[in-house]
Image 1: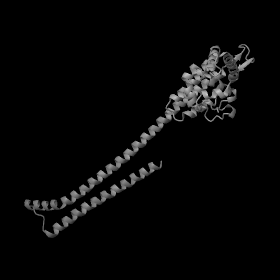
Image 2: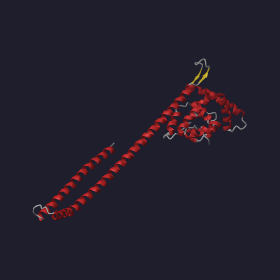
Image 3: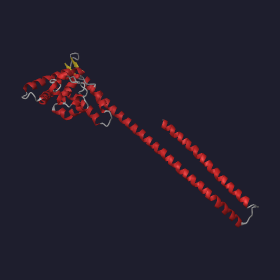
Amino acid sequence: MTEEKTQKSEQGLLSKYIILVLVILFVVALVSATVVIYFYATYYPGEIVANHSKWGTMGDFFGGTLNPIFGFIGLFALLLTIAIQNKELANSTKELATSASALKEQSTSLKTQNFENTFFQMLRLHNDIVNDMFLGEPQSADKGLNGRDCFEEYYGRYKAHYNRSNATVNDSNDFLGIIEDGYKSFFSEQQADIGHYFRNLYTIIKFVNNSDIENKKQYVSMVRAQLSSYELALLFYNCLWSVGRKKFKDLIEKYELLENMSVELLTNPKDQLPLYNKGAYGDLEIPDQYKQV
């Protein structure tokens, strides 16, 4: 706003300056013509005659005297015109730059608005998926678990599969293999209930990651804030079995999605935490007993 006022002030001063210069040039031309006529009348007094040759001589005198003066005034006016045009061109360039900047800001704002509209619709859909979850007798809504309460039960079911896998595996140090075997059998039983949930969660994070929006982590943190402790624990294992590891694990680590996870919920925190890069945990404080020596 200040720049616009300054530009208008400069244009006002320029207009006044042009008018003043034109007046001065006109006065100089008028005075020059008057002085030349005065000198001619002083040195060549007499009446006006009808002699053609004398009129030609007088014309040569006025032309020879005034033409250089008027030519100089014309040159000065031309230089002034060029200077004015350069000033107007500079102002036009500034206006174009300002317009381009305003259009860029408008485009960025519109792009952000479109992104946020889609993002919050996807987040709303994800919450709807969670709220529609139900575990119990279909004919009796009061004899079961609803919404996020279901994830504690889902996680308990996963741990049962994990424990069976851990008891039958040949190499007890194959932590990733035990998780793979346990989660695979768990997912085969619960796919109808949680498959849609994890696919939609992955789609949201992928949408943010593939966008050209700024502050991507800020939007992912909004998603992370929606996840309960048991959701995060189940997400931890979902992204360590072969399917989740191929698609989702890198995004988990990139956007610190496990930052709010309760480490104590893991089946073997000390040996399983290193299966993710440190970036996955963000500012999560890991208790000393679960840290690798």
